[in-house]
Picture 1: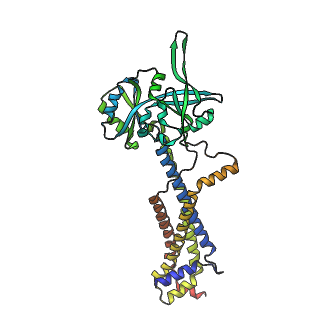
Picture 2: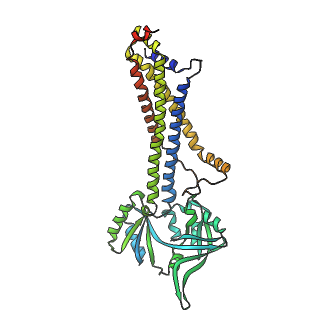
Picture 3: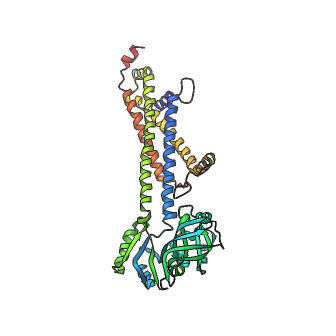
Length: 410
């Protein structure tokens, strides 16, 4: 008898003119499809932004820095002690200098960072994103590596010399003036993030000369942790081990934490807003089944008089909701995958049409995406439950119809 309920449920969804579905059924399916597809696309893009933030931004900036007001000597002994912490993957000396690069195209503010070139492979992802040159080239005297956007802005390439002016003041018999040096570009990296505009790399020894400190001194120690989201606690444990009151720490959360939290918050808000589309689609499902119940009152009355049970009547319209939900969800998942995988092509076409870069103001200049299977399953299950609940309400009201009153007016 359940097969009869299923057959009748599908029959009632058809158009009276012989179409596969009636107009109201198509509206419900389209609404559900658009809602599912939008939710999958947006959440996948937001997941992609989170992952790119973690991989490309947090993969370059220090997880944590051990700092001191004054350059501390014998930093190699400190690094050995820091590495004894099981949560520390690696540690290296790190000098950061706010500087100005000057060219014929103007001046640009940059962050000049002194690193150990031989150790950078274990400390960051930058060596994997070199488009010209190699990180080892920093071992050459007076050499520098810059980002692709900065290279384009100052019109510099490998082999060119650029002028760097630091914020440190040099004093001589003729007076005090900012330290200015010419460095040769030996490499260019490209992360396709805002970092390409300002980050520049020199060797630790070159940075020591620019800061005018001794060879056995550094201004900070960079730490790479095994869990960047627990960098604060790991840094505290490191300071306890070092037992030096003059040392403090600064983690990535101080510089980029608000950006990461903003993305998580926006992801939550957008997901809630898009779920409203699912609710709208469920209302269309509800309206479709209510209209079907109203238009099929005569048939319901006849079925009741020939012995159809209340469960069978409910299942007719309940199956309608299941059919609409399954079709809408399947089409929504397919459309969502198509939109997600081709989003960058769509944006590129739109940029060409509008003749402007739509993503130039963001920290990533393309649409990354990361498809989370568990998340998509949860979206589908939630949408299915909402739609089924919407179809159950008019289905239960159908069994409350009085067949005598219905057939009396026929």
